[in-house]
Image (cartoon, rainbow, N blue to C red):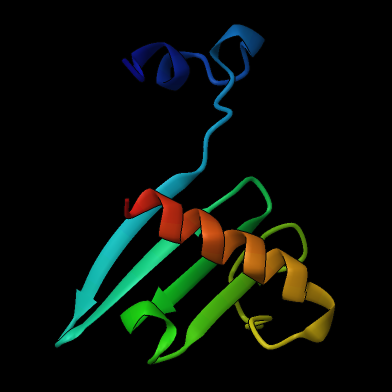
Length: 88
């Protein structure tokens, strides 16, 4: 149950240590996302229609898509793998 976490999110015994996965459909395109404590990464049509990567520490409103930033290629690759593993 998520009730204890929602009632008292500051209590360390209710710490949430998992990533969140979501899926959305826009027309014929499916977007799948993973949200970690720091990043949100989304692939549209399994990446064929693009990808988005946002750093919520520096950009909580998701203004700057970092998906093509070479400095974050390792992060993107890791999040891509987590998305793929979640589909299995």
